[in-house]
Image 1 (cartoon, rainbow, N blue to C red):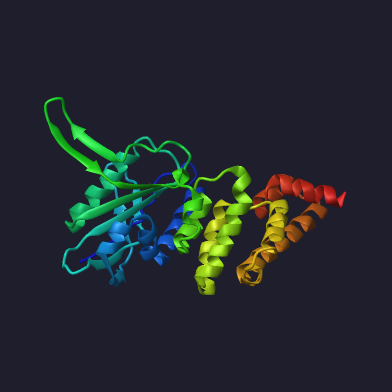
Image 2 (image 1 turned 30 degrees about the vertical axis):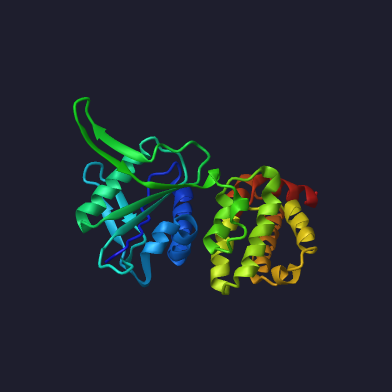
Length: 293
């Protein structure tokens, strides 16, 4: 029996932006597949035998109609508990609104079912602010209903991040950065994220993974970071948080990046070029430039 969580790429407004988004979700869910289902889809989690999980090789699917190629990045084989039933779990992260998304989900379902002929559980993860399309796709006429295809959804921006800070689940911790929070809550969100990390006692590699995911979607300004450090210093677990090595690693990278930008400014290199090379926000570059004047 095989459970195959599949992350399938789509055509985003920016291929570079989406590639990073796709890779981040792929790594997170591949590493914490069991934890992902446990916190967001507990009924599915209860049914799966995670002792029989086996990653399979990547596959490439080509749409013969439009020539579009999609890579099935993550394929995992497992069994349902106490049965020999083979199922497929398809997970599709969607970072932007797409009017025909429900039809695309049906196309993926059809392609996978045609190949494996196994029961499937399709799941879509929405991380954009727009109203997602309905979670079904219909084929019908006035005189005859052919089918209605349904899929499960996870609307991250509709979720209250405070509901998950006591879960001590690594996927929930990482996805706090994609959930619904107010602008003035940004510092508090990261503070609770760091507290979750200390309670979970993950190994350094897994810490880096969820920290990197979180920082990709919720990155504080330098001023916000200073406020965060001040608030953390007053917490009972302050010493544990300050001992997290990734915090220093990220700060070291930022310091090195700013030193590089300063050297480029001293050489009189165009600001737009510096922005492109360093990936530093143009406003931060301008601030550094003024400091040199």
